[in-house]
Every structure is written in structure tokens, then in C-alpha cells.
Length: 374
Image (tube, rainbow, N blue to C red; front, top):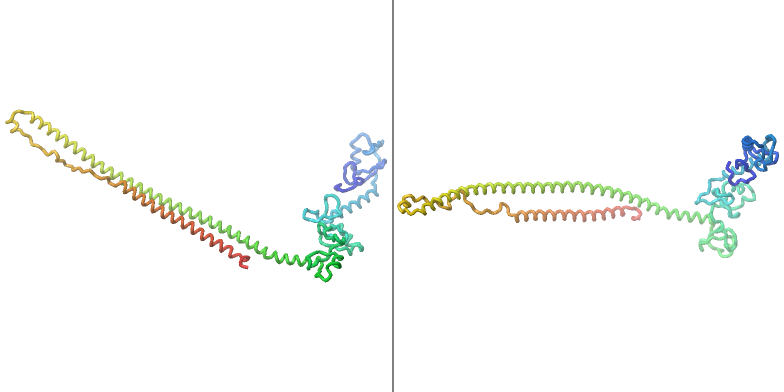
């Protein structure tokens, strides 16, 4: 049994707990029989732990029956106090008669005694005839506030006209003819009014909680819709980019092919021209040799044929580029401008559409709340 709140005379000086089977030594000191027996068996000298009186042999110990009966009464009294209810927490009114730090929770307050009692300490008010007339109320923390400072009497009534609590003397002096009721009646009336006022607030809380759930669902659905739209938009843009890259690659391929064909033709023309240049140079050399001769008759007899210097198998004219660079750049710029216009339009529609839809949905959410319609 714990030794807290127990007088020292009921504690064994060896185990420092409440006596169990108390025995008395010849010198008059009390110990638990088991404690003093262990103490003597562990030592060579048999003596009293308190006064140090020495005995030749271990005295024959007998249970101190009178002391044992006192301990039994003490145990029962302590047990009754422990069964007096649950411990008082910070939110409870503690019993004024409980001692120490383990005060029990008060179940009633007495306006006559100006005290609060736990279950165990309230028993006299239930059983003693002289205490039965005392007025018990639900436990309150400050009973002093229930006492009229002017007349030093308990306030038991409430004046509805002046909205104040009254003791019997106050009622006779200043509130004769007023609408006066008991504190209990006014308490019940006030609680009823508060309950009625609390109901719409509780309903509003419930409605707002439901609205929060709807908003959360709306946010989740909106987030999911945006993610799906982002995936589809990315796929569309990827397709568009792939198509542009494919067309660009095709255009590059066509340009390369056209350039290759043109270069092949130009190379063929250049080879032909070099052949014709060689022939003309050979004819020019022959003509130069004839011009050097002084034989008039021989010149007339061997005059060589003179070919046309401009006669060529391939006609050459300076060509324009196969595809003007300016035309390509203008076409690409036009495509970019058109694409940007469409993309800007899509972005504006998404922003404006989401703003209008969000405002409409929020308005719908709050308009649906019953507390706003009432």
C-alpha cells in the first residue's frame, strides 16, 4: 500500500511502507514481522534498528493486534477516499476536503458550506439529517462569487428586469415587484436560448464542411482535367513539331536534289566548252602558221576553212536560283505568324473560359448552401 498522505507512526522504519503484520520488540518499537526477521537474520548482532538495544537471542515476536486493528481502519478510510471518484483534471472542480495533490473531482457544491465535495466526502450531506437541508448545486469553481457582497448571503434568484443575481435581502430591498425567477430556472432558460442559437451555427458549420469537401473534389477533378489536357496538348504539339520537321527535311532534300541536278548539268556544259575551246585553239594555231607564210600562191591554194567561234553544242544562259531565298523566308514567316495567332487565340480562350467557369462554379457552390438561402 502506498505511503503517501499516511502519518509516520503507521510506517515501518525498515521498508518505509504501511505496516504489514505489525510486531513489537521488547524495547517497544514496531516493525513488519517479515522486515525485522530479515533484518536480524542478515546480521550477527540482534538489536533494535531504532534504539540499538541488543538482545542475546532473537525475541519471540507476536502480532500487535490493537495496532493491526487501527491499521485496518486506516486502510478502509483511505480506500473510501480512493473510491470517491476520479481524479480532478484541469477542467474539473476539485474536492475541497481531499488532501495532498491527488484531489478528487467534485460532484456537488454546497451553497451553505461554501465548499465542493467528491462522492466520498459528499456522503454526510446525504446521510446526516442536519446537513440534508443544505442546498447542493452542480460543482462550481468559485463559490465566493455566489455570495452577495452587500449582505453576505447566497444569491439564489435572478431579476429579469435588471439582469442581475439576487440574495433574499436584495430581493426584499430593491427588487420588490420585479420579474424574479430562481437561478436554476434562468439557467435552464438561458441554456435553451443558447441551444436554439447554436443550432443554425452548427448547421452552417456542417454546410461549410460539405462545401469544403465539394471544393476539394472540384480541385481534384480540375487538376485531373488539366493534366489530361496537358497530355493531349503535348501530343498535339509533338505531332505539329514532327510534321514541321518532316516538311523541313523534305524541303531540304528537294533543294539538295535540285542543286545536285543543276550542278551535273553545269559540269556537263563545262566539259563540252573545254572540248570546244581545245578545238578552237588548234584551229587558231593552224591559222597563225598560215598567216606567217609569204607564199601567196600557196596561201591561196591551202587556205583552211574558218569555223564559227560561237558555235557550241550546249547553249548557256545564266540561270536564276531554283527557289528564291526571299520566297522561302516569307513562306516560313507566314506560317509562323499564322501559327502564333492560332496559339494566342487558344491561350486567350483557355484563360477566359477558365475564369468564367471558375466564377460560375464558385457562385453555384455558395448559392447552394442552405444557410445563405435562409
